Amino acid sequence: PGRIRVLVKHPMLWGTFFWSAGHLMANGDLASVILFGSFLVYSIVDRVASYIKGDPNPVFVSYRSDIIAIVAGTVLYLIFALWIHGYLFGVTPFQAAS
Image 1 (tube, rainbow, N blue to C red):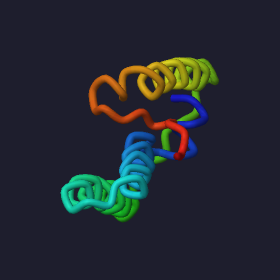
Image 2 (image 1 turned 180 degrees about the vertical axis):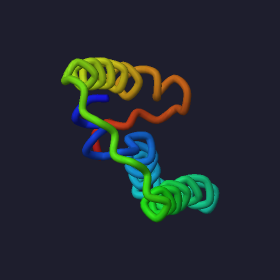
Image 3 (image 1 turned 135 degrees about the vertical axis):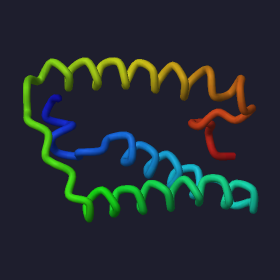
């Protein structure tokens, strides 16, 4: 694992937390609150449970994993956010406010 994994311990839970929190801020209807709120609660509960359980700290190996994760994650995020999200869900995340 790289430095990111060592520092945050559970990157997927942080990703789920920020994804669901962002969608809750953007969508206030009941269905969205139930869906994204449940993911938000899941990420918080699972992170607290892993803290209580006492997960061992991963040992830092190299920055190679971090570089791959940052570059690949940024490219995939931009592709999805700028093009694919609009086709799949009919809403582009970065549309101008009117």
